[in-house]
Amino acid sequence: MKSVGSTQGQGVNILELFLAIIAVGFSVSMLIFMCHDYDENLLVRQAQLPEGPASALFDFEETYFNEPFLVSGERSDNTEHISCSMSYLQNFKKDSVSKDGQLQIHGELRKGESLDVCLKRYNIDINTRYKLVKTLVKAFNVRRCRPGERFDISLDQNGNVLSLNWYKGPFNEYKVVADESGSYTISRSPITVENRIVKVSGQFTGGLYDSFANYGLNSKVARQFSEIFSSSLDFNADIRVGDSFSIIFSKYYRNGEYVGTGRIVAAKYCSIGGSCLEAYYFSDGASTSGYYKPDGTSVSSSFLRSPLKVYKITSRFTTRRFHPVLKVYRPHYGVDLAAPIGTPIVAVADGTVTFTGWQRGYGRIVVLKHRGGYKTYYGHLHRFAKGIKKGAKVHQKQVIGYVGRSGYATGPHLDFRVWHNGKFVDPLRVKIASSGELSGVNFLNFLEQYKQLEVLLRDDISPGIISVKKETIDKKPKDLTG
Image 1: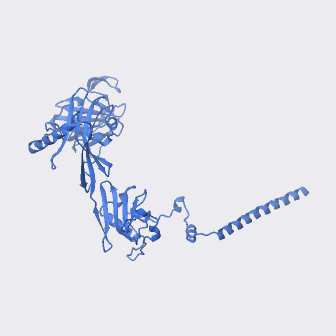
Image 2 (image 1 turned 120 degrees about the vertical axis):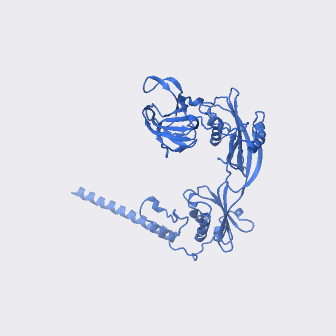
Image 3 (image 1 turned 90 degrees about the vertical axis):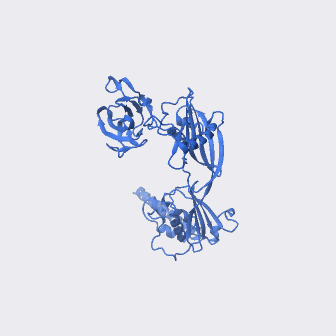
């Protein structure tokens, strides 16, 4: 019994010691709190924090609305003006204030911000923000502004916004200016760019895009080059290592910084065997524009060499091929172009849809009828493009369907066939006449332009900058590809 009582007494002593420690800790905390300065407003805000997930701990006063700027409750012109205080002005670097005493703010839109939230971050008062955003809406969709877009704001010593320059890109600048009445007007600012005409020459070391990349040319320049010769060359099958190219095109710079690539004005492709293709851009500023050969005939023809931009030939045109599914020898009057499922298929020429549907081994197929007794067949499709049905008119390069493996197919590919004057012909050997030619005054003007470019395109002219011209523009150049 004595041992039990001793144990109980010891338990009580431990409990009393624990309570005493808690009491001492609480007393020390209260003393520290009472002797330390605190922000009463902060405590009030903490006391009013809503219950819920962690996102509720962040007090977002601004949200995205259908309107460019909305203020809760009724907006009044008598709303208290919140100007930039002198202490606020002092937060900026001294060199940010211009000689006439105006404050210059240089900022940019952050990810997830609306224009209003962005301007609020620089202590622009609510009425001014409303007016500025309402003015900018007249020029562009403010809900489509992207992070990184820059702006400059000029304010007087009282914090009133005198002007706002908004930069949506190297070719899109807008200036908002305050008038004497306190209203704002907006205009598009003209900009000066350098248009550098350059020449690049090189050899193919593999595919088109990789070869161009070796010479610092981006994919958009490569795509231009392939489209220029799309009626004469199949860049998936025709080019060989050692073939060469030369192009003359424009590059745009602003303040010494590259901002985009312009149109190719002259291009040449030469095979190892010595045969060359040339193309020169010409436009009369009205209805005639495109690429032409030295004799004035169009580089383009009424037919493309291929309905796919990127593919691999897995089977060619032949009168005797072992069918991979049926396991018998039979003619294959087309070419099989392997490509990933969903790859867009384009019409090789203007025409009319004569059939869409399912045809046994071909699976989903589209048949187009063209001028000159031609028909084209596109088989094993995954699906048809919108609007492609019997009787529909299609134009060259229009998407008509997508690569699949419907019907008798061991993998995704396009079975492409060409019918001419009652029989199938090899799609890779079809010869189509030019789609047009220049004549009259246009031909004479083209010859004058051609003579200047042809000299520069010769192999004995080294690659590099040919000319530099400064231009003042108020919008994005039409030929800009990026």
